[in-house]
Length: 511
Image (cartoon, rainbow, N blue to C red; front, side, top):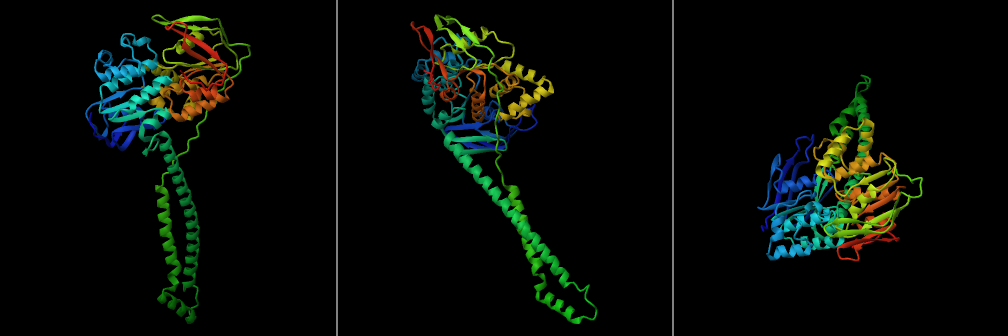
């Protein structure tokens, strides 16, 4: 494994279908160790990782990288190329990774039936087993339960090459990243430390820049007033030393003006005005060169309503096959119009399977359920984008306004041929907001979303009057929004999963 740095030198990159470049003149250096890559959905995080791994070529500039790079994408549609090799490997590294991340020997054969969390673990393990010099990982903890997240974080911590980490997982960034690269609309910044330290420094720098701008603008107004006063004084002096209004016979007055001119006293006001003009020009130049970070006010409203009925779902106890010999057993399940329910448990426990079963057994009017699935396949994301483009202008405007409020550029989203997973989720959320649902069902809603959007969605869901059914491994997310937990755990038989209902505050772990 090479210990060399990864270097971007004046890199510019633009997609063929885009009007503006994703990066322009980007220069950055990435030493061995983990660098967190943070920015809004669509800001270029994934593009940066693909450039680093040679999957994209810059339009200008060059990238210097040690040989051997692997990119782990957000999506897990297809198994990694060398998964079968990892499953058959007898070396210590392969055996350790399979054990650490609980990877079963038949996963290559039954990839379509694996949960997205299981797929993600296999993807990361296969990449680490190859010991790349550059490892670019895009949202590694998406779909990962708490135990697997801890194992994965410990494994990634031992990586010694150049690591690029895109993640909305604040704890993971704080644990792994020695520095963070912050992608903002008009610049790219590198700050030391993980997410917490980097953002504290970025906020402090932004506050300092705004304070400097305000002070410079205040100085400019003062200098403009002084300049106006000096100009007025100089004009008065010009009138006083003029001989045009002096009578021809008034030799004393003419002599007095001549003496002032010879001594230079008559030009004092003019020189002061000239000096003040120099200060004015300099201050204006300083002000124009100051960059003031923009403050983005994010906020959306989910226009849900309480259903005018006693129950949204009354499902008798039953069981659902999970593949192979595994079975999910569930008790009688009821969703009332004001319920806020969280589903928690390990990967592969059947949470998404139960959600799909519930959706199939709902008897609600059309448009009264908003569903955000755990994962949206690439083809489906492209289809959703085509449908959005075909919406009537007024509806399209409403949808894109919500996307903008979630910190993504609507024009860039509409112009792309392949929207990012986070952008697709924002579009689906925006489409759902055009209705007044009785029930909102979200399966891992924080996956793929940038951090500001997650916080924005949390605030909107807190105020929403609809019933909520939320699947998440994010304890903080469930803790803020739910009051009942449907927990998935070991059943009576070791091949079974059983659901238990806990009427408690939602801040539950997902073991």
